[in-house]
Amino acid sequence: MAFWVVYDHLGKLVLANLAWAATAAPLLLAALAAFLSGDPALILFLGLPALVLSLGVVAPIYAAGIAHFAKVMIDTSDASFADLGRGIKLYWRRAVGIGLVYLTAVAVLLVSAWFYAARLGAAAPWVGYGISALAVWCLALATLTLPLAFPALVQKKSGVRATLKLTVLLVLDNPLFCAGLLVYFVLLGALSIIILPFAAFFSGAVAMVLGSTAYEMLARKYAAIEREKNDAGSEPAGREGAVISRGGKLVFDDSKEDYLNRGFRDFWFPWKV
Image 1 (cartoon, helix red, strand yellow):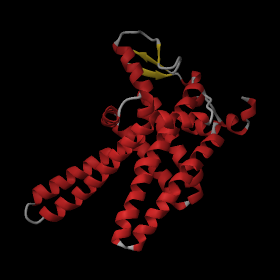
Image 2 (cartoon, one colour; image 1 turned 90 degrees about the vertical axis):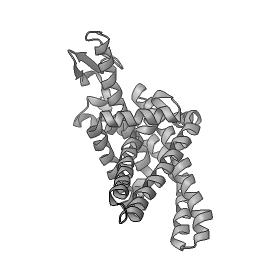
Image 3 (spheres, rainbow, N blue to C red; image 1 turned 180 degrees about the horizontal axis):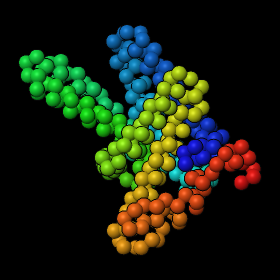
């Protein structure tokens, strides 16, 4: 699904990613220059604020905007570039809240993982290493929730706390699925580091489309389970024809889902569809 969404809307997604990169790049470069300088004052008053603005404000705002953009593409098979602006306008405050929560959590957990092992490792190893291990596990959980956080925000339209709670529950209920999703995010991150033009043109937008389509698959799953609980027979759940619940089993009817029912012919000859 993610591949065909990107394929159908590549031009608009590239423009969205360029806008994201153009906004974030100056802040990241300023932060990098400050940290490389080694000057504590420069790091404190320029590097850290620039890093927080880039990762905790700009990135979440665009992530939410593109997640909304992707939602419109998935729901309607069409979207205009104005949908990016609508998504930013609707969700920017909550997106910044989520971004700052993640930044704070990652910073606290990284420091805790190092501090307790280093300070208590000799005097009280069970306590020190135990707390450090707990911090590492919490950090892993936070990392697994990140790909679904902004798609969950725009789908459920909830507050920061409710959105984060939902993503944690999704990860706990679908750990392998979410681990696989994170692998794709890591690959996108690696490509962005190795090939800078990829970061400028594609990576952020593609990541949000991937997260949004992953959330769509989970939403279809839970819609079918809920319908099964309500004894609704074999009626479709979610969008018409998307998924059917039969005797406790989920049957995904891909033949009626455009993004999940394409092949090489559609890739090489899109005008013949």
